[in-house]
Amino acid sequence: MAQKIKNNVYFVGKVDWELRTFHGDELSTHHGTNYNSYLIKEQKTVLIDTVWGPFAEEFVQNLSREVDLKKIDAIVILHAEADHSGALPLLLKSIPHVPVYCTPNGAKALKGHYHQDMNLKIVRTGDTLDLGNGKKFVFLEAPMLHWPDTMFAYMPGENILFSNDAFGQHLATDKIWADLIDQAALWDEAIKYYANIIAPWSKLVDSKLKELKTLNWPIEMICTAHGACWRKDIHKIIEAYGAWANAYQENRISILYDSIWGGTRIMADAIAQGIREADSNVVVDVFNTAKHDKNDAATEVFRSKAILVGSPSHNKCMLSSVAKIVEELKGLAFQGKKAAAFGCYGWSGEAQKRLTGLLAEAGYEIVDEGITNLWEPDAEAVRKCVAYGRAFAQRVA
Ligand code: FEO
Image (cartoon, rainbow, N blue to C red; front, top):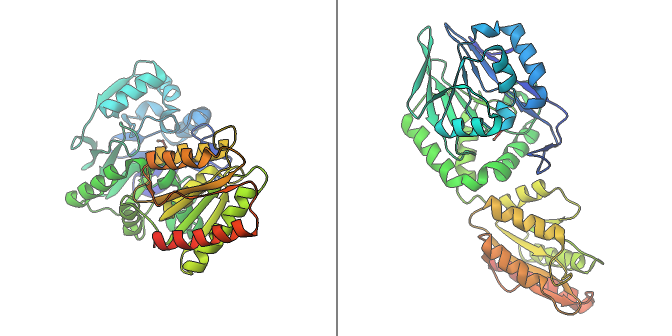
């Protein structure tokens, strides 16, 4: 069922209430998601993006109730990833010759995904698509926000920016607008989306925001490809992206650890106690990497100014759940964060050195050599961990 966005612009996407993991099983989506697609019925009828493949049949059926498919004059694919282009092959069975507008990299990705002939029309920044009735799209390439092919489309007059993944959230909603959503859930999902999907490309985000400012387009609505769209206080999400793209941090320290028999957990708790004693304003969160959601933990790291990562030595390595999150953090490439490693060992104690090396490789400024403990912590070891936590808090203050 189409929902009106403004005048002749309609939402025709799919609300996926059930989705709990995205990108295969890489990304948790506790609140589901939307695959937002838009239908513009001006003199020309144009579709922006489609939905993920499993919903292709439903999408095409619903779309055919809104418009005679043969009357669609063009399809714009802002980003060729399967969650937005998945229904395109089925749709093109009904209208195989309809022009599909995309960037040069979009064309490569569509061919690479679907291996079928499409009437691709390549567009670049500044190119326009005339919609009739004095309306048009102006395209703005946005490479690596978050794929090389990504572009935005701006609709002057209606003053709508179609931003695809940027400014989105994995949040299933049929309410369309961000101002109608529970604000805590909205912003939790917006920052999680940025931290886990957009953050590696923060320099390009910053430059794209500056380019948008220079273009000085009046923007009344940002219509995203996931979650809710923005129509009130749009500056808040733009300013949030500006902050998130520039070595974002809050006065927080995250402690991530895994433990075999509980010794490294005792160290984590004692270090947290020391940090709190040294700085009552800093927020300290402690996560067991084997039990806590990886993407939620990564989001907390994104918000932190420093992290401590702990693992006992196990077969001369760190525990696998710790290795997993450290590899994840390397890919996410957060900027301006400090780190140190800790953990128990029984005889050789390789994990903390490996961890320190991997954290440095991931771009974290190593605060110190961290702290280790032979066998299980006794009262004296706990005292040393508390003292270490106090010192760490002072070093990262
Ligand atoms: Fe929502 Fe990059 O796809």
